[in-house]
Length: 288
Ligand code: SAM
Image 1 (tube, helix red, strand yellow):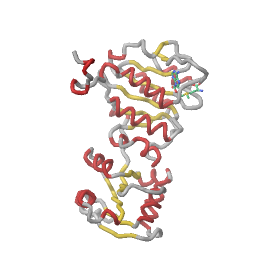
Image 2: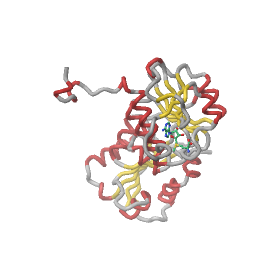
Image 3: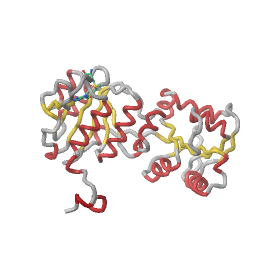
Image 4: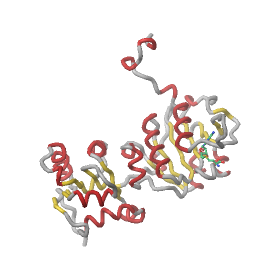
């Protein structure tokens, strides 16, 4: 019989790297352990508070002994504890081992992963989603999630075998946007069906695209922007599922743009009319 989870968490002080809870958290470095537990590690006070404010579930809050007596850390710990999370107060050595780097953040959290169900994606006019074909590089994925958040796009669909969005390196690169951007995943076949039902433009980016990326009228409905794999570009099946193939013109010797840069350039064009500086942010010469 499963022991019911206590309504408030427990507080533990740990100084040993061989402590089983510490060992378990350190294993989150491995995708297999993240998948099995459905959890991941995120670092930093502000990021953890934002995550909680956005309704994410924290299982364990870890902080260094140096945080004892610090008002904000203790307030955060009390909030997590009341929500049922465990609190682990650790030595600098243990904190560094969990973060796997020198000068780690004072506070870290083990969170439950969240995936959106593909059938729950209901695109409306003005919405933009980004689909990524077999993305491999954690830094690219983190940067793309951060950019999707920055332009106010709605979410990201991961197609086929991709790098894990909940890997610590990716989470770091998102700078907190992992908690703001819905993520869905689909195999290629399912995505082709999904794109076929999309009620607006499905724009694939392609080095052989015949349309300048600044030409389409992106404002006429929801846009699904489809990006190719870093090495191989889009598969033929995915290119065939798009109703326009756009290209960013280039000069110089580079064959192509980095995937995250190409995604950013395309997104800022697609969202151009939605992104404006507020009246109080404009320079004198830009004011009407
Ligand atoms: N060798 C790959 C190819 O032939 O497609 C290069 C892939 S590129 C590094 C990764 C992805 O970024 C591409 O599949 C495409 O989605 C996007 N991309 C890069 N440069 C682009 C450009 N100039 N125009 C449109 N998309 C571009």
